[in-house]
Image 1 (spheres, helix red, strand yellow):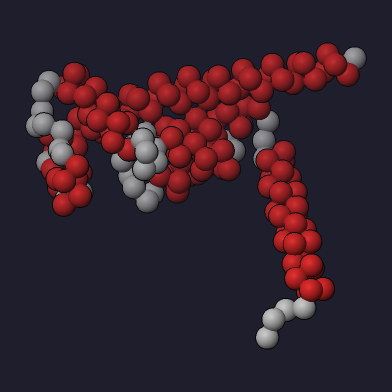
Image 2 (spheres, rainbow, N blue to C red; image 1 turned 180 degrees about the vertical axis):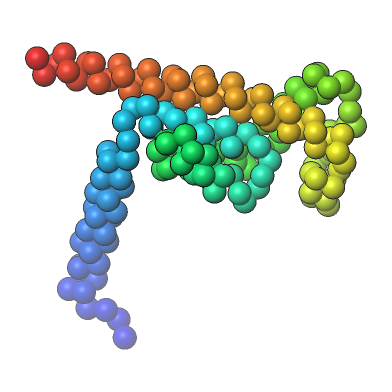
Length: 166
């Protein structure tokens, strides 16, 4: 049976109303979960955890860290997306190279084929230690720079709005 013209005409409006409701709820969460400092701390917590190769746990760990530092949970989850399928390899290669710079040369960074066959942790303590040290440093610097920059942006926007209202 084909749907009648009147029922198919209702679907777009129902779809639009669901999207509108979802958007309203997300905006409500966005505006009600914290001050500028809490938002910046949440983003920084997510970015920090996103720099680590804890695949599948980054969002959970980012939100947990945001809870510890009293940051915005939504921005913490979004901040972990700094590592994604497009940035994994360059980010972790850079983290590993930084770890090697600080701890001395280690085993060669694995090829893509080696990474597909075994998890990073199976490649040895020497490699894992260098990768984690690099991830820690890159995560700290990135969190401070991007979280701090986000806080400055929010403060700037707030001051502009206040000036415009007066």
